[in-house]
Image 1: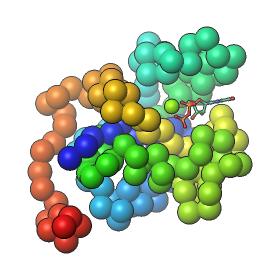
Image 2: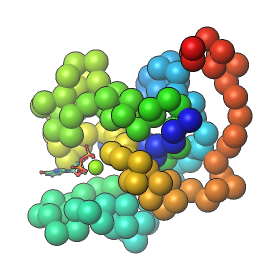
Image 3: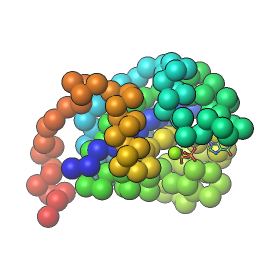
Image 4: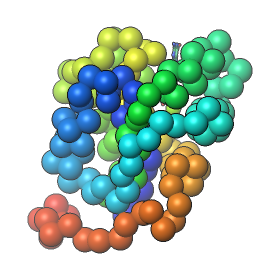
Length: 149
Ligand code: GDP
Ligand code: MG
C-alpha cells in the first residue's frame, strides 16, 4: 500500500471544502491514515516547498500556505501518489479537467485548494515533514475486500 501526503490548503478550508475533498478521497477507496488541522509554520512551509525556493512566486506561496489553518493528511492505497495527483488535476486550475478538485473548485494557480506529493521520494519526504511515525495509523478498511482484486 503506497502512502502520499495531501493538504487542503488555507483557501480550501476557508471555502468550506474540507468535507467535500475528504469525501472524494474516501469514496475513491483511498484510506486516511493520518489527519490534522493546523496553521503550518513558516519554517515548515519553506521546507515543504524547498524545491520552489528560487521561484518568483515562492514568498507569496509561503505567505499564503501559512496564512490560516490547513488540513494535512496521509492517504494510503494502491498507487495512492498517482491517484491523488489525478484527483487533484493540473496545477493551474484553468487547465484542470472538470471532475478534478482543481477543475471543479478553483480558477487561480496561487489558490488551487489542494496539494499532493508528486513522487515516491516527495511523498516520503513530505510525510516526514508533517507527521511523526506515531501519528500515522495502521488499520484495514472493511471495504478493502471489495476494492481490491
Ligand atoms: P503542484 O505539485 O501541482 O501543487 O505544483 P508545483 O509543485 O509546481 O507548485 C507548487 C504550488 O505552487 C502550486 O500548487 C501553486 O499553488 C504554486 N504555484 C506553482 N506555479 C505557480 C505560479 O506560476 N504562480 C503562482 N502564483 N503560484 C504557483
Ligand atoms: Mg508539487
